[in-house]
Length: 470
Ligand code: AMP
Ligand code: ZN
Image 1 (tube, rainbow, N blue to C red):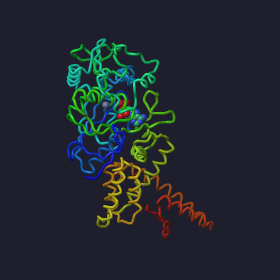
Image 2: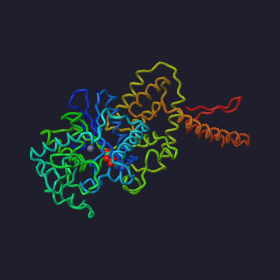
Image 3: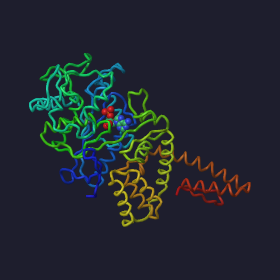
Image 4: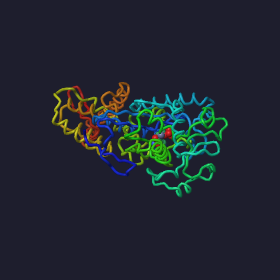
């Protein structure tokens, strides 16, 4: 198996990836809270997790990937306070919680499709697993890791030798971080304790409630990911993914619950994607208007341009979104697609040369998923002197991971790109012809050079000037 070095949030180091079982990877992803459309920040996380999954498959692993759908229990504050996000969505749109969940779940997967994000092998809504949650909570109570107070069941973080295994947070920082408008929960024995099951909801209008040994109620957010992961992937997990905001408290609490329940270490590698930010900070839904895939489409961007935007930077670096940068990526993407579309199919595949490029691609991706370097290798392939058949072969190969639709870019998109390109080229050729008529050869040469820079070669023939993408 090709070496794959990956940063692990748990050890805070880049490590050689080694799954529990040879050749198999068990991977879990925190899914969306389906109370609204996903914003393109959320989708940055899902794009980079998709790249991770596809690269593992590319180097030969058999990956089983599970994702939950949060359709209950995620409160507007991650600190067990605030309103249930699903209920908030239902109130906003005068629909039932289940209607909201179905609508935004479909919308999420439609967005994923447009971004070439593969659907995970298992998708499990939280509301499907209430008996499993109850069972895990009962076990945590039996083992002394949980307690009942004021009608709710809490996880007792003081029972753990080490609670803050993933993050550098501590109790003092938690207090500093607490917002004034967040009510303190006096049922908790320790500041960091969190709710496993609510029966005393602050919201009488909570629609979805289930019978439990502690009364009618609903689960906390964190319990769902521990249960759903163990249900489908067993007691030993290889990789758990999410955005960096999930590190604390969500993933910290998942580790606390799962390892207390199982009695051993649960997950070896934690993969976190840094945030997409806008000028005012982290992109989030609470800010009112937010950027979605549909909005990008309405503004004339192919969603894959956004995928390329994400691939151009490293997943562990914060990424600042701006339309100016997206415009530049759009131009590069369109040019890339046109150059690839102009490739022929002639020739035998030159395996020694393609192996060299594949090695370079693996060196990039195997170094903690260096996608921008992988894109450079793709450009190097296009610039190289290998024949078109070999170029096509490599592009198809790399695109198994990059998923930029490089060879099968949707026909209508390609037509648009070609039309746009043709228009620009024809305009410049007309300007050059004018310049030649006026004997302004310096200008004519400058236009030829400009076209060449854009990857367009022109030739003056008896029938007029012809051009091709090189
Ligand atoms: P949610 O639907 O709020 O549960 O979030 C879905 C995923 O998006 C989680 O993995 C979050 O960590 C991630 N996420 C949220 N905001 C951002 C952001 N601005 N940039 C990147 N990922 C984010
Ligand atoms: Zn989760």
